[in-house]
Figure 1 (cartoon, one colour):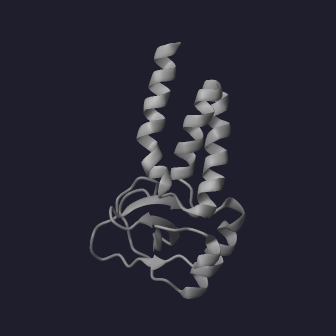
Figure 2 (tube, rainbow, N blue to C red):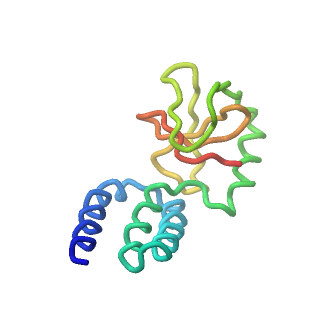
Amino acid sequence: MSKKILLAGAVLASLAPAAAFAQSGGAAVGGATGAAAGAIVGGPVGAAVGGVTGAIAGGIADQQKPEFRQYVTTRKVPSYTYKEEVRVGAVLPESGVTYYEVPAEYKVKGYKYTVVNNTPVLVEPSTHKIVQVIR
């Protein structure tokens, strides 16, 4: 039991610096979702780990996704053709993709958006990794 608590503490400690950089609006939604999922799987310790992990992965809140898709559509952003599956974790190439600022009303900081295979996605600019697919 104590090994599980120590392991959970180590995981939390390693995730805490990254959580500080999570965006405000999506982080709250991601944190709540992650905490709920973690509680189901691992009880109170799982809730804490899930909450931090979910906050890091936060993005456009579910209720704002349709509005954000509409925003992107009205901008007529060109779609980048990607030969692989458009999914969270996929890394886009360094060149040939144009990234755009997310408007402030979506409360997403630290990420940019682009359109891949006609699907809006949030991307971590320094790694070009997709962090959220907006379907």
